Length: 322
Image (cartoon, rainbow, N blue to C red; front, side):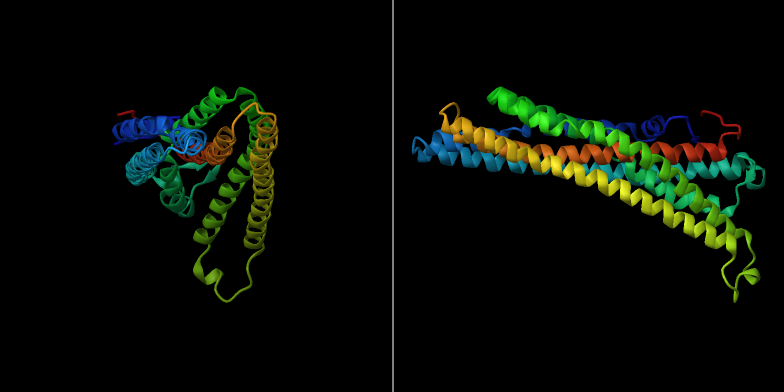
């Protein structure tokens, strides 16, 4: 029976290795397609339209559609494999948790920081917490690869076409890489506190007999726990939305800066309008991966917290690494 290694990534890899390889291969096949639409748009404006070449325009248009269809097919297969990984990982994790909790050591012997882990905590671990970790598993490896690879390919293309304009775009986006880790540390602490408090609330409901609760006012402990959960979630929402607002502002600022400076270069005759169009489209393509990377960074942090909490609940149980 599979048990819990110390690393969430090791657990994911142990149970989904073959499918992860398939997803990574599909991701690597998808990456070179990212800059192709940008180059085709540039050539349509600067070559086909400027030279009034209808045949070239038609060929470029067909090539553009073909690239879109190929990319859509690869994305479909990649996302389908991710869903299969997520579903399989949830199943495996529930089997492993059941083994650690009920087979290795009876629940009455399990402790977490001196407190008995009751049925409420067990239910939370086997249901919602396992489900959330499974959802993360599908993109644990391919997600960062796809988004970082897209950024590298698109930025590489932009530097190849017009290095100075690409440098300006990169400078406008770079503050996000300092803002996100700072905000994420705060969100990590709030997430862990919330999950532990929700477990405590579940344990309170399970531990108190039904006749002690029915027809009576909510106990002080219950009200205290629900108030704490509300406060934690409000603070989490404030941090998350502040970070998102700043990031969205910076992402929107990029195309504006490139359009203004690129427009100046076009007026001065130092570049062509097709280059600026490609850059604006490229920046729009960068916005998506940047947002996805921020989300993935957050998901990785949350997954490690949740997995660590599962380990804390079973860490003292004797585990064979079979």
